[in-house]
Amino acid sequence: MQSSDKDSNQGDSRRDFLKKSSFITAIALTPSVAIKAAENQSDERFAELFEKIPLNLTVNNKAYKTSIEARVTLLDYLREELHLTGTKKGCDHGQCGACTVHVNGERVNSCLSLAVMNEGKKITTIEGLASGEELHPMQAAFIKHDGFQCGYCTSGQIMSAVACVNEGHTNSRAEISEYMSGNICRCGAYPNIVDAIVEVSKGGSKA
Amino acid sequence: MINFQYLRTTSAKAALALRVKDKSSKFIAGGTNLIDLMKRGVTAPEKLIDINHVPLKQIELIGDKIVIGALASNTAVAEHTLIKEKLPLLAMALNAGASAQLRNVATVGGNMMQRTRCGYFYDVEMPCNKRQPGSGCGAIGGFNRMHAIFGTSDKCIAVHPSDMCIALTALDATVILANGKGERKLLFKDFHRLAGDTPQLDNNLKPDEMIVRLEIPTNNLNKNSYYLKVRDRASYAFALVSVAAALEISNNKITDVRLAMGGVAHKPWRLSASENYLKGKEPTTENFEQAARLAMTDAKGFGENDFKLQMAPNSIIEALTMAKSKA
Image (cartoon, rainbow over all chains, first blue to last red; front, top):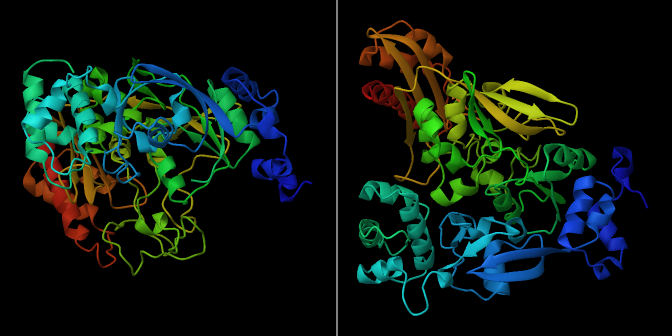
C-alpha cells in the first residue's frame, strides 16, 4: 500500500492511513498518553490514532473537559461548543479584534488560536467579566460614555480595554489609541471608547 | 480549514525529530500567520507540531550579547527592561508591528518566518510563483502598490512583512539554528532571501532545522535610534516603507550608523552604501540627503508603487533626523 511516499521513507501519509483505517475512532486516548507517545516517538502511529484531541481548560472560572478536532479555533470552541456567543466572529483573520478574549490574563485574538493550544489555560470572555448583576467598571464606563453604536465590536473592545488598563498602556489618549488599534469599530465610536478607558484608568481600579 | 494531525513537544530535540520524520509537517508557535494561511487554503500541513512548551523564551544579557529565545513573545521582548534600555530600536520596531493581541502570542521565531502579505500570494485563485512555482506573478503588471522596489526578480516582487526583522538586520543580529546534530550560526541579514528564481523560499532555514535563539551584540546606538513606519493608517497596518535608523554621534561626528528598510524588498534591506557614506561625517541634513540618494541607486518601481521611489528617501532622511534629535 506504499505509494509515492515510499522513496522519501515516510510511509503512508496520515490522510491515506485514516482512509484505510476504520477502527481508529474507537480508541480513546488520555492526553498524557497521547502526548507521551508523540514526545518519545516511541510509536508515532499510535499518536496518530485519534481525530479528536482531549482538551482541558477553564473558561470564566469553570473547568471544561472535552475532546475536539485540532482545527477548531478557540473562538469556534467558545461559540459553538460552549455557546458563549458574547465573543464575536468579525473577520476571523485577526484583523478586527471582535474575538478578543483573555488567556491567562493576556488579551489574544481567539480566531487565530487553536483550541487545543490552550490546554490547561484560563480563558476569560465577556461573559466572565461582570460579578453577578454588577457590571465590570469597564462595562459601566462604555455605557456611560456611549462607547458603541451597533455593538458588534463591543465585547472585543471591552476585553481589549480591560487588558490595556492592566498593562498600563493608558498614559495618554494617544497611547490608548495605539494600544487599542487591534480593535476596529466600523461605527467609529473611538473617541468615546478612549473616554471610557481614560475614566477607568484614572479610577485606579485594576480591572 | 483542512484538518491535520496535532502533536505537542516539550523539547527542541523532540520537535526536530518529529520534523525530520515528516517533512510535510510544520512547527506552530503563536500561529497568528500560519492559522490565517491555513484558513485561506494557502497552506495545508498534514501535521502541526506545537512547540509552545519548548523552553526557548529567555531574554538575557550574556557577556556583551543580548540573547533572545525563539519562543519569546513579541510583547515579552518589547516590554523587557534590557531591550528597552540597550536595544530601544528593537522595542520600537516590535511595537510598530501588529496589535497588542497579536504581539502577546506572536513569537520571535514566528515573526521571522512570516510569509508575505502580497494579495496574490493570499488569493489561491490568482497566479503566484511563491505559492505555486511556475504559475506566474500577478503583481507584476497588476495591483502592486505595496510591492518591492529593490532586489526584485521577474518571478516575484513581494515584500517581507516584518518590522522586528528590519531592526534586527540593522542591529547586526545573529540567528542560531539547530538540527538534530548540533547548531549553526547565520548572520541575520543572510537569513532571509531575495526572490530570484526561487520565490517559494523566503529564507535559508533548512527543512531539518529550527530557529532556537538570537544573539544581538550590545552597542552605543541606543541613545540615537528611531524606527519610522509609514503606512496607510496611523496604526495596525503593514508598512509602505519603514526605516530603522541608529546613530552613534561623538564630537558632532557620526562614529557608527545603521540603516535598514522594510516594505521595499523581499528581505530586510540594509543600506550599506549609505552607512559607509555617513561614517565620519557630521550628522547634517545635507549628509542625510546624500545618504538617502545613495540608497536609491538601484531602485525600480512597478507602476502603482512608483510613489515609494520618493517616499523611501524621504523616510530615510526623516528617520535619521528623528534618531539624531533623540539625544
